[in-house]
Length: 237
Image (cartoon, rainbow, N blue to C red; front, side, top):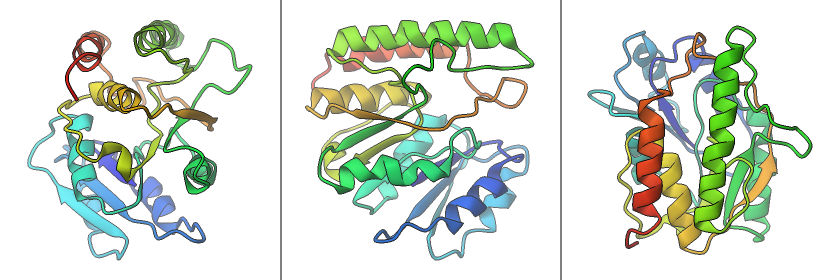
């Protein structure tokens, strides 16, 4: 599990305690925590886990974005199956078994934890304190999902989910370069172009609003996503 942490003081300890208490029969769990020099005390929290036998702790000198943190975590991971896990508690750790099952059974190499269950309708995000922001993000989600689907010849309801689970073989030889949330686009496009069509497994999801700490920039990040699509869809692998 690759766990990027930046300014998550409200949830970091709860999330890490739950993650390190997780037991999955038949699996040895490795937790790669990548802390990006938070300003809210999160670094001090993650440092308390440095001696845990399951933990590899990476302390970055400055924040360069979630994608950069995940890339550094992937470079240090030794597991056969890799999973990306945020420290903000939007997703449930109880879905791990369902996400890993298709890979363990040899049916798929690449799994996405879809926040859109069948019949769930339009609204992925529902912010009680910021309903307009939620509506805008939901519209953007479907717009960008359509762009990905048409460009890559797939049909995915939630290509941008944080829960991306894949066998190590999928990324051997690939070079990643995205530093922000465009990393989600880069890894998805490159794995699809390699022939790994992801299967979507519904997961439980509780969206948090910008007031609660959501870090996406509604102006900057969409521009990086469009650039990522144009670049990685045709760039030589």
